[in-house]
Length: 88
Image 1 (tube, rainbow, N blue to C red):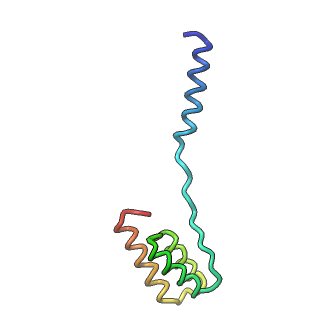
Image 2 (spheres, helix red, strand yellow; image 1 turned 180 degrees about the horizontal axis):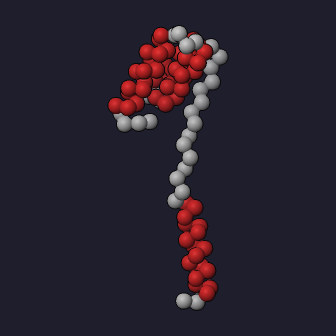
Image 3 (cartoon, rainbow, N blue to C red; image 1 turned 60 degrees about the vertical axis):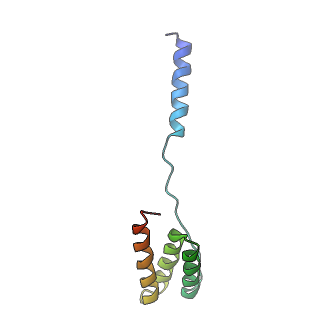
């Protein structure tokens, strides 16, 4: 095989391998200012079936008030729903 063909083949191999690399996981972020704001956003996102974002909203509500049982209950419901549907 000629060296020029070898270089072309190797360069094609290198460039095509870059396209097949797995993409990085997306980090979900929901900004909210209070527990009520987080809960409202979580409810709206749940209705829109954006479960990963709703999960993050309820997680933020729990971070702001660990003893909020409503946030824990909704968080658990979303986790179960995501697992039943086979992931995000």
